[in-house]
Length: 325
Image 1 (spheres, rainbow, N blue to C red):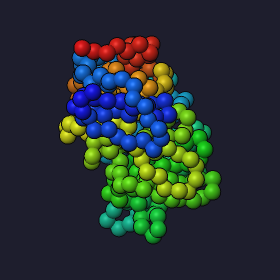
Image 2 (cartoon, helix red, strand yellow; image 1 turned 120 degrees about the vertical axis):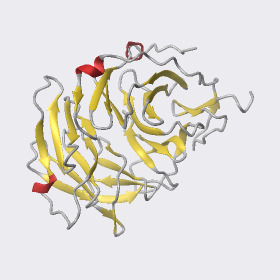
Image 3 (cartoon, rainbow, N blue to C red; image 1 turned 180 degrees about the horizontal axis):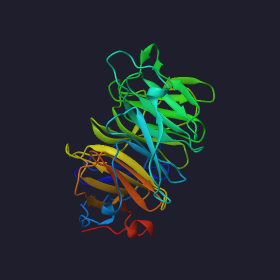
């Protein structure tokens, strides 16, 4: 097999993608399977679904119950909430100015949001470096962490957790991933190698952390063993094209082993079948997006100053996405 051809290897049931012929390394035994299909899929035509849902807001997260939380565009200390089930009126959920004291000359800047399995909102605020957890009724606010080894957290890109109570925080300026154990009240560095995160995701088993990194362009995996040791990540997907910067990523829960990645300037979505090692769907967007999340059968996208949604392609829902010519 020629080096310039794409290869795939299996690792724990997933496939390592090498779109350039340069293989990522996994710490486990690897076996050669078949060639990866890297032929670009035909872009799907623009859908009208996005016209039916348009919410003015910034970074967002969605609970399993269908509550969408998003940051106010004009005042990034405010988080709003809307119920996707009945599309009722949006409401102000919390304003950090009512809880925290601002330093002179600084404004609160909420960088990221994530909701845990109990429906509590976690947010990363960059001016104080705080990782905060807020109860469902917004009456209790906890500061989980704000620094490591005496250095305050700065800009956060990537905030996610697992059902075991661990929280993962990406700090691209420090090229570091932090793991916060909310049960033991401990914080430590996860990554042995340097990684500049754009977004984070945890798989359904809670045993793997996926990191979208833009320098270099790749998806990195960290296998979680729930101890305090540092880990060396391994490359799941390598993007040789400099324009294909992975900005955001999210899992399709049905069918499993499907990963959706927002690429480049935010105008392209790709779906990867991780077990088969194939790109099974590619779609060009009529706007530039910054974040992608999936809830039910909808793809939610954060654009410059609004949030829209598109239907998940039926072929993916049925688990029979076909390879495009």
